[in-house]
Length: 317
Length: 261
Ligand SMILES: Nc1ncnc2c1ncn2[C@@H]1O[C@H](COP(=O)(O)OP(=O)(O)O)[C@@H](O)[C@H]1O
Ligand SMILES: [Mg+2]
Image (cartoon, rainbow over all chains, first blue to last red; front, side, top):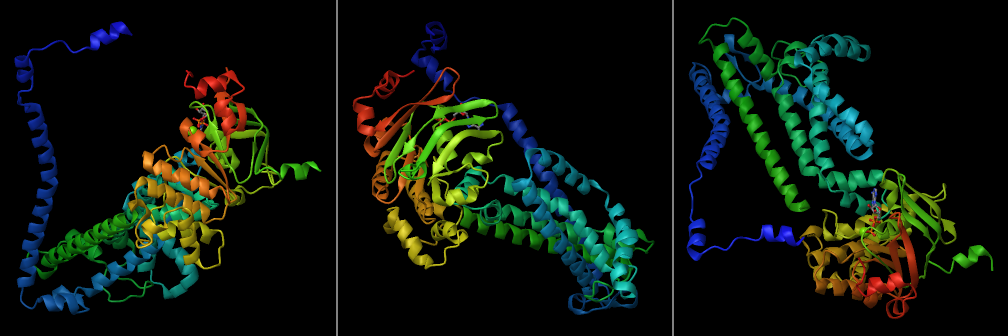
């Protein structure tokens, strides 16, 4: 004991030594790393700005074309750029219908899976199930697309018969929902899992059951994270392209009937950019305007989700 | 008098209680009789099984994988670990306050009302909440802010909120596991005063590592220590004044006079 303490004692220093040691010194490594990290952050921001600029420039070309007005774009219900019909609503309605259906699947199942994994599953089951769920998220969306077309739609036909089109929004939406379950589940599970055990103990100690504890204490405590998961899922559904391009239909159709075929915004963009449409035609230019609209919707959703998270955090922390 | 009636004299009675985590015996052969409407302190060095014993009284150890027990814990003559006993129901009779205040991230009002609601309370909730907060000596400080988050309170207030929350379930026994160890001395004294008031109506069992606290605030004291296998054993149990002024066991004397370890 004595020996090690003597080793640890700071050697005597003169006042001059001390003041020299206290001198500020340059730290080049520190500065370099800081610059590099700033650059990493800047890349993603600059890319985003570049994309918005490009989209905006091309979208402007579209809106400058003869016969195209913002008013018509946002209010008319027919989308046939080749013949001068520029109402974007049919594409928006299809995006809305498929997305809402997807969320109706992904929210309950995703949250349910998250609650099961975090609150009920044994450590062993968790270790197996969580990676399994994440595998689902790794399946290419084109596979989901054909799953919708060749499995889900025929299955739905059992119930709806001929009332349901071969290409339809219901099948695409349901499949998209299945695809998003792992995302919602994974983000929600992280949020639930980070709720301190002390809260659960507090609830149990008052005679709460596991279900009461999970739903009324743990879920509310994790709500901001869970809602962030929902919004992520929502953005994912709005932006999803392959499934709707394959299974929802390939023609704009202003309807809210999920049994009908209709083309979403992303589906339309995929079809036009994949086909051989000449540069500077209304069709070609229009995809940038629609891209910009999609970007805007995602942005608004993100802002809303941040607001919600911030508000909940105020209440719960 | 039948044996059934005899055990009714005690709030809780353990018989040859042994508590295990897997193969490790954390507590060995404890026979403890808790007197109703009194404050019983459990003291002893770190790791001697105080928390383990306390948490076995309301079956909070059920959540620990590998935990099991031998012996009996009698409550109104019923073994709390009998196969037909529902641990959820046990906890409605025997509440608990933890070492670190753990209010729910809900409003002050909701913190208190929640336990009553899940236990099927049908009466006037406002009255119940006010009553519980008054009983926990917190009402005057929070009555104008019932909608504020329980987490906005100070540590001492949070702990009293947790006591109010436990009272709202109308328990018979309140277990406290080092309830003041995260609090400053003034907040600590407030909790001790509160315990004294509450002991008129409730049986209180408190684990503490603070011997002054045990001496000041309790009626009975149980002293635990570890045997050579690191299993917790109860060395001595009696009235607090006797334990602190006239301990019968050498180990108790060493511990309370600070000659331990
Ligand atoms: N969850 C657990 N799993 C395994 N061992 C535990 C667990 N909790 C406590 N122990 C062990 O049981 C013994 C008693 O612990 P505890 O009751 O917490 O002691 P105290 O509260 O007196 O400090 C210690 O040796 C501790 O390491
Ligand atoms: Mg302890």
